[in-house]
Length: 159
Image 1 (cartoon, rainbow, N blue to C red):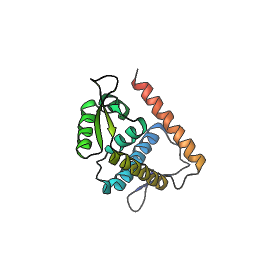
Image 2: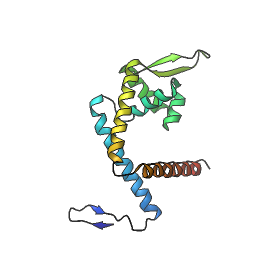
Image 3: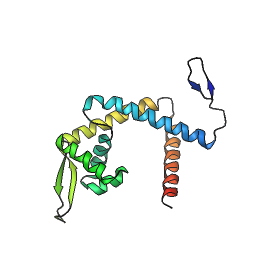
Image 4: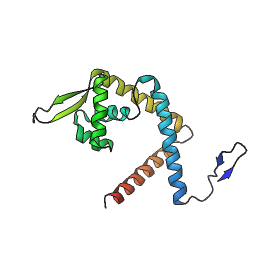
């Protein structure tokens, strides 16, 4: 990388990329993506991370807190505190399992479903901005490479 007049680092697409360069670029891309989504979420009243709860519950339906924590890759107390806040805001509700009275699931309220769809639109807008300079093929390849990296790192941590 070289420094430009404004103090920002410039990169060259043709320069070799070692492993550290790639991971640093991933971290900065992830940070920029999080900021783009957070900026869009500002008017919704959601706190960062709650949009992921909405998305997972929209996709999976009702989930016990422990299972929700697992799909979000957070600790159970974190998921519990988050869902309690979201319940107080009227976005989720606790429901008893039809098959096991000891089990309590978390599901979206009508307001939560509505906000989950808004979150999908926010991610669509942020994604269009982030990927505006990539072709459909570039996006497909990038998605596949990112999932490959994720799978490889998760496999290594499970050893």
